[in-house]
Image 1: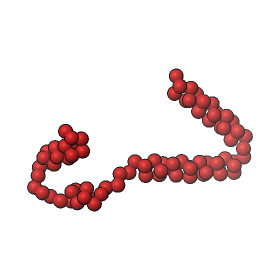
Image 2: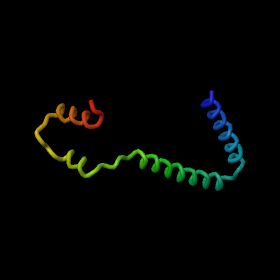
Image 3: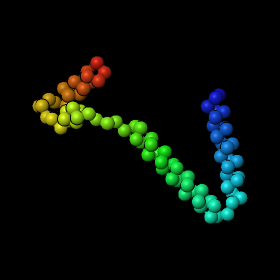
Image 4: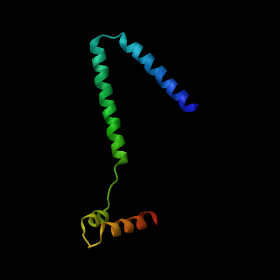
Length: 85
């Protein structure tokens, strides 16, 4: 119910903003489009930055080092260390 209400409010707000934009001349619409594109890109970059995991030097060395273990052995070891499986 609450999610539906938020979506309806978002839709209502978008429709009202679009009604205001439709009345503007082309130059204003173009400037709004450019500003919105910049803002959306900034948010997209921030979302990507928040989801990027930094590796420690030990983790990176572990990726590069070949200790002769099979993929299954390395996978089991990784799961054991990460999740205690």
